[in-house]
Image (cartoon, rainbow, N blue to C red; front, top):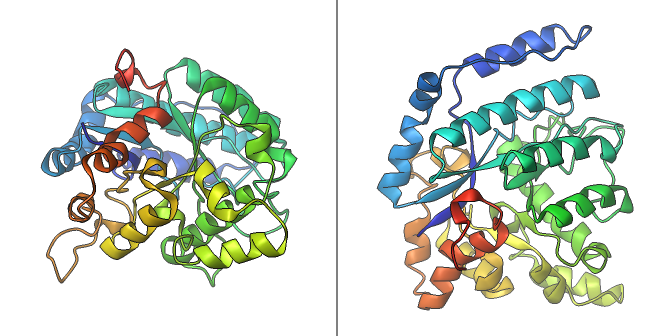
Length: 334
């Protein structure tokens, strides 16, 4: 079995964006209004995804709302809550149509200046519905005041406590940025991957929540490349060795370069790397050298010459550990 832990509903029917446009045009009168789509309409939108999974021999996919579309910086807390519910409901509908192939992962109703406790109702509600993971935006305002507290700050503790209790992993994934100097996909996302790792590894979070499961996407951004810089900072500040703290996190393989993948695995170990391709995301472009999509990164991993137990861990077993509450894995022996 091959499990991909990183995919977003980027191919959602256009009615979803139309709903969002209407909502943003009525910010003065936020209201909860459902988006109703037929199962046939949702199935049509997923056809390309399932075809790609079959072609790439991916059996199971962790499936979440479009990260760039979470839009936590737009509107009030009520607006964010209504939009989050619509996005999560659509993911739930999609996953119900393919329960052996898709694992539902939710976004959270984060909003600038809103208390972290406001997220807990949605976390518990989605967990009860069978969602097995969530996305956490470390930069709620998109790079503007009021600043979002560091992921290592105790401000986040109510969320970490809830996720630990539910055995639900969090993928730290930024949404859009308002900073015109930052390309959203090329610099904003990967900068926050590095920042998330730095802040969490320098904190007491994993001392206080030893069972907390956090995934840093895109191979941790610059983490493997700057590994010794981070080790130097920890040594200078008399912190626990960075190489030990980094192994409290998981890192996905949404990295489209074989040398970089090898470096990631060498630095943090195969037991802390989990397969993710983020298909139909940033890497959907065709590589002019190979003629294949950049995000078809499974051949890159297969070409590393990993030991059988390392391959099994990265492509399957680590995902089962992270998403152990997923219905598709219930009753399986890890």
